[in-house]
Image (cartoon, rainbow, N blue to C red; front, side):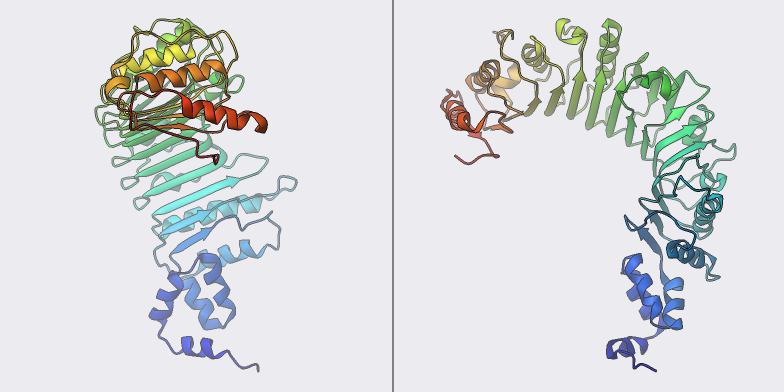
Length: 447
């Protein structure tokens, strides 16, 4: 019989509870390797592990896949210690074969984890041909604190849904057979704080209602692809979550997104696509709902140019806003003028970040009336994707000329040929500045 390594012999002299503590600090994949040392180590591993975390280490399932057998053995262990977390990434069932028993295994793992009073379940990227339905037990756990599922699945929330301790709930690529069950689901989570629907679809509803006093973070994200409004399953959204701190909305306007007053809102991330004048009015209404925000990321795809051509009267004032990042995909003559007009409504703005497409001709001149925030508040401006066109230089010059308290102007990703780069940077550095403290920085280049 081969002699055991001395280090293993030393560890073997330790009591079980000490070895279990040591194993608990190892990643699940590494801890599992100790089970080959001896029957005692195999027992210790299966008995001690409280976090099962498998990230990007799982290939295509095979019938003799040791990973499947390992999880089966782990969950069938009679030692029913509580499980803190069960996380699996890149779980891939080969769609070319019929592995119904593997789908049953996935159900079995989830249910076994729930029976061990698991607090966190995270399962991402189950790739398959047919939809996987989540077990009903998943919606009646009294121990779950975090649930994140990225699975192509058709689901129905049971009538007895109850998740009294759930604080984080994320769904990606889920399809709800009864869209009204969303209200049922949220009402079953009295302490829910972090909620996300990402590319989800809903049946049997025309309006998505989200109501919660406990929510602090809400993410609603869909694709801008063709037919996105019809595919998501509803036209309008109503949100009543007055204690939100973070809100993300990536979608078309449909029939609008109505928000209750959110006085606690600190950050908002808004990406919208506008098709017509009705969309512009709905976008203004959406922005009105986040007007108390302190930091705003605003991206607008306005192919119809309705927003940039229209007056800004419907837009609210953003009196608490201190940081604004604005991005637009399409070039329009009034983009830069519109931005300056918009920041007239942000009297306390400190940081402005712009990511705009360039155009060599046709831009309107910058406004003559200077926003008060540019005169007295803005300390940092960042321009992304600087293409060296004259209208962009005019905008930068405008900011430098009127930014009396400006401390830093950052120019990133200068898109000119190498032969012109030095001349463009030299021209930027030579622009007159109102603020003596202002530094012009091009962090991507040395000069």
